[in-house]
Image 1 (cartoon, rainbow, N blue to C red):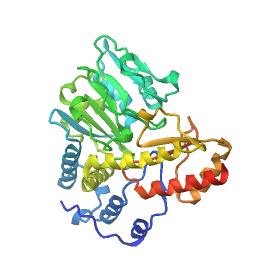
Image 2 (image 1 turned 180 degrees about the vertical axis):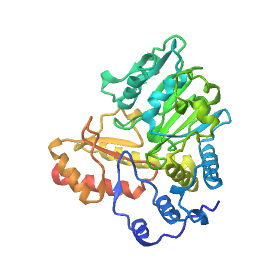
Image 3 (image 1 turned 90 degrees about the vertical axis):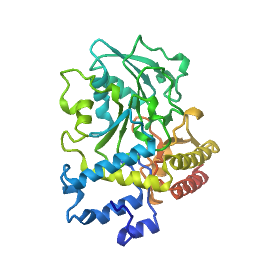
Image 4 (image 1 turned 30 degrees about the vertical axis):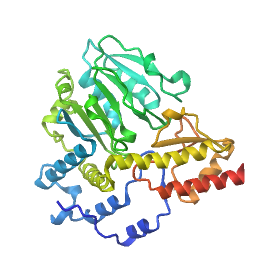
Length: 377
């Protein structure tokens, strides 16, 4: 398969050559310009087939090549061992709040959850519909600005699994390393920083990642599941939501989100060309460190998250005077800095720095923040 990126042309060339708009949205998020341009070039005629990938049969030999190559590239990027299966499914990560307990939680069992913010809270609420849930640790009393110390976690007796959200997109809270839970299957929602750093997949039972952050357009979720955890779903679970059924059907039990899957494959190849997840990690550290330094060095801006748990992907911040919020957002918009408004549940601002965000975007944001503080502070 020829995946050479075509020469830039037309409107896309203009955007790539002089990008004046930087999208800091938390998701759907910006994609690499090279990936969007390649999709544009291939949209009407995919690799000489005469048809678009949008209208291509998901069971055709052409789409089969996309399926096989995208999984191979993802396995290479994350060094996914043969003990784990990769599923490309419909729906976002929120669908997995139900599918995880449906597949892993027997009627007489208990699952342990770590509560570190809004998304883990949503997962807990949904899981409680399917069985007994023990909140083994919670940062709610600390405003979700930190992660409870590991020795304070209280596991139930023989839990079916331990679930945690590796990066809380809204609160800007991130685990710096995989938590040690011994032999208990560890389930991680990695949606908002998937492919932004190396991860030892062998230590996890299940990884879930919605597509609309670092993977591609919205509409798909990737599930990486350890093979021995398949086949545990009860008999009442719909076939469509059974990991084992989906695995045996190679994620083609029903029509998958074909265009998003195709776009994900292009993103995987783009990441490989950039140097893989190690390069993505280095870039994310550089971008976020510079932004946090600017916030911490100023009396005008603030970030309340405990330093060692600050997210590299999602950086929330507030202004000293919140009556200036609207002016900040309006002027940022005019300066080409989009989607900086914080989530409605926490307010303030939020800059999401996913893999596709160029260093130049952070440069422009920092210059704007410094100028705004100088004029309004």
